[in-house]
Amino acid sequence: MTTTFDSISHQLEALAIEVPSWAYGNSGTRFKVFGSAGTPRDVHEKIADAATVHRLTGLAPTVALHIPWDDVDDFAALGTYAKEHGVGLGTVNSNTFQDDDYRLGSLTHADPAVRRKAVEHNLRCIDVMDQTGSRDLKIWLADGSNYPGQADMRARQDWLAESLRTIYDRLGDDQRLVLEYKFFEPAFYHTDVPDWGTSYAHVSALGPKAMVCLDTGHHAPGTNIEFIVMQLLRLGRLGSFDFNSRFYADDDLIVGAADPFQLFRIVVEVIRGGGFGPGSDVALMLDQCHNIEGKIPGQIRSVLNVQEMTARALLLDLDALDAARTAGDVLGAHEVFNDAFYTDVRADLAAWREGRGLPADPVRAYAASGYQQQIEADRVGGSQSGWN
Image (tube, rainbow, N blue to C red; front, side, top):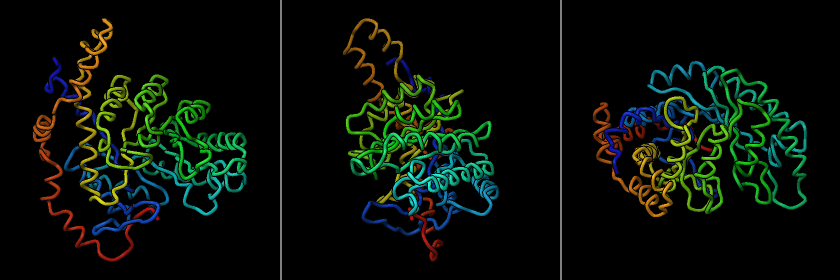
């Protein structure tokens, strides 16, 4: 390998990973939501925890909000509070999956009144964006059906297009709609936005301010996710990532935990496709739940995993790779690719952090900081934040 860490280290300055407010609240499985000492009781405490992650890593300058989980009376004041803690407010996520009216769908419901209610919720989320200065409204739908014949799949696509159009038309000049997809769950027979193609079809029809959100956990086993990343970048429609890790389905585990090589391959395509660095408008985000591990150290580990794989991807010797490809040297190209992946950059990144006034080992620094003990002592009483 001819590419050195010193030659790519300056590019790491561009890495910014948005963390989700809900990762600091309680979460669990379909059977149980688990509580833990020190869990935030409101969005202010979530932001304080997220700011701690950024302070120790320098990688997480913004926090994504989820409405209504993070509702407050004054979002402009919340933005000021976040700024005072050294972070900003990022993507606003709508929620049309936890209201009884949405049992049979939201933006695709057969009842126009329910669809209107879901649209109004998303319009209110844009009002929140106006106050926070957020760029992106992210929409994920639980809409679908469980049984053949239960729903009119074609009509639901028409209703979805109509609903999205109303939401899209409310966007400001510098705002975007990003439409997430998921191939199943909670609907098991059909899902209204099950794949990148469906999301792409809808956002393409809406206009240039509509993009696709790719969640790395929302694919069937064996799916070549980096191909989808390449294609969406090629088409100019990759708006954001929800990074996490999966063994089977939407496991929402720490990114890179299940298959670090997959994360590396994805990041390679992000870099090659212009989704990283100056001029890129692709948002790199986490969407994870820490059910049994510590929430703050879990987020720290997650952003460090993305940073490590970004460094390895930047080390890929593109000249040698192109030469091998041009020569038809299959194994040679594969070897060049693997050389970058297997390069251990941990010591280099530790030195890189120290050179910027950050702890060499943010996970250990957090453990030694006393922050966890402090929040466990302070956050007594009240209701802990969580999915419900």
